[in-house]
Length: 135
Image (cartoon, rainbow, N blue to C red; front, side):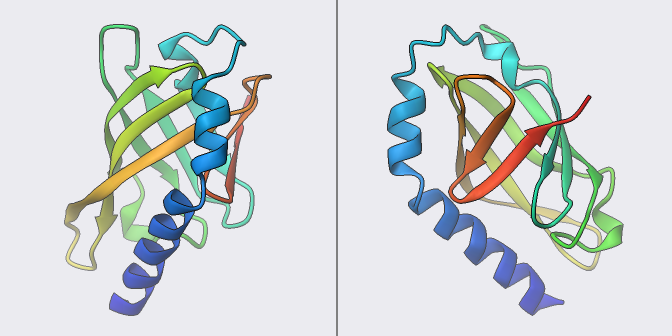
């Protein structure tokens, strides 16, 4: 299981490092995003991981809670907070602290991720991972 956590952390770090163009494009987007547009339920297309982001506004930071683990986390992670202090930076770009889940049921802050939303507001990327807004 430690290998799975290490692999997930590595994927997230590589995804973040690889998203600089998306981040620049999203931060400079002219789509007129508001901070709360990241709020909602989002599904990662490859793993089936689903996160609900809530509480983000122009003046408030939000959180992300695991609704479905898919292949990204073990089943025990369901209901846990995997993102904290989700913050709108500018345009279609948000930052958050991300947390890794451990087999003993604890979460540990692991770094910062950037979420780059497309102009339509229907998906965002964390590196190459694509999250699609759910109804």
